[in-house]
Image (cartoon, rainbow over all chains, first blue to last red):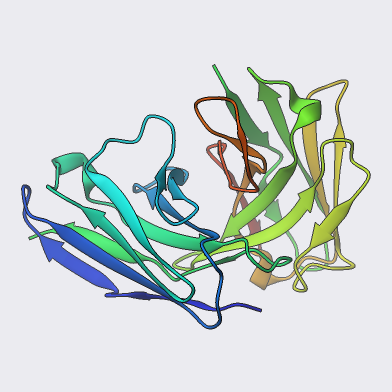
Length: 108
Length: 126
């Protein structure tokens, strides 16, 4: 099973700042990695798939990069609605699909 | 509008059974793989089970294999998860999610989870 490790666990930033979230895989997942946003009390929402492609309707301030074992989600300029928990997920080697433990992006 | 709506959650005793349903609308349900994903209190998301559009192939996480059964009724646009021999470790919000993602041009890009339902809470406790 591929283990995904996200860092940091919590990121405290202010609106307008740039956010950089990391996801590291225990073995190569190629570019088969996605990022999801989960707001409190809500279901997750797909943001990025195939490491760098924005899902339909996702604002351009969200971008993804990386390959193999190291991936990054960048939010270029934080909006108030971006404060949430972010998860990475791989589909390179499934079953099982696996998720990271999440990064909580909180308002500083 | 594409929508998924889960139902059937609730309080169940250890060793008990429960059947979850997920009603789909706004898309051709039978053409899409579907998955169940759960989230225990304070825990990460955990994929539970997957079924292809025809229902002819299924996959399970090791943690539920032999206890949970995923199925679908394409004539009713409904996905099911039958859970048995439940334990406290199964306490979670259960989400159904689309398992085949198409980009804005309609091009199939793979098994990514989208859309998601709002979830239904299953609590296993005596």
